[in-house]
Image 1 (cartoon, rainbow over the protein chains, first blue to last red):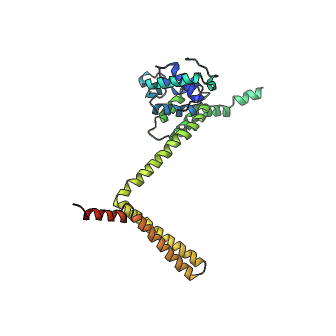
Image 2: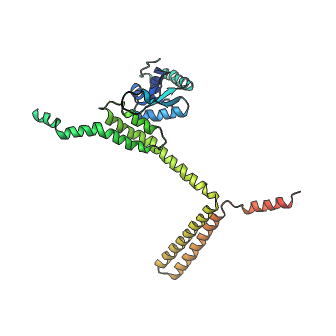
Image 3: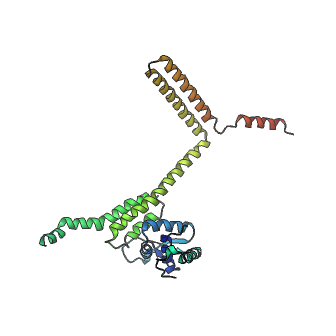
Length: 102
Length: 170
């Protein structure tokens, strides 16, 4: 996957909570990436096996809304995204990013 | 000031607000997700996500989804259509029915080509032109039919080598 600002930002947001569930809208807010860029990226990560997805348990939803889709990092995903962030940290192009998790 | 307050609190403004922030986002998003194939989980995902977006941001968020739907949804649709079209072309080609259909289409093309050339000749006002056109059309059509009907059959060289193999078999 090509190392772009958006990918690095999404990687930072995902690795902020590497074992947690991530939701589309929250992830886009947290990473500061438009959904038009983020959803295709999530699809590519799913295809490459970096993420797994699932649906929220309807019994646990208190509000009146449908079940949402969540994404979880796989071991492979943690490794790959970690490597991307490690490379990006020393890259001049990504110096302005907010390295929260690092 | 009073006029401004009245304009803001008027029925049309209230209705417009309800439309833009209440009804329209869900309605438009449900139309947009139709761009995805029926089995694509993103259809359900986007509709579910809409309810977590703050109401004020919903119209803009839905507008953003147009981009996603166009680039992801339509791309899937187009590739799925091309794949199914290719599959339809490939599978019946192995049956006799397809061969018959192909020949019928080929004959129709022959007729059309011959007729078109003949009419072009007649339009030019020359009988010989029309005759020449008809003959040329028939020849071109016949060549087309022979190409179409010979598809999949062994070539002359393959037939010869098969005959030689049979003859010299120990």
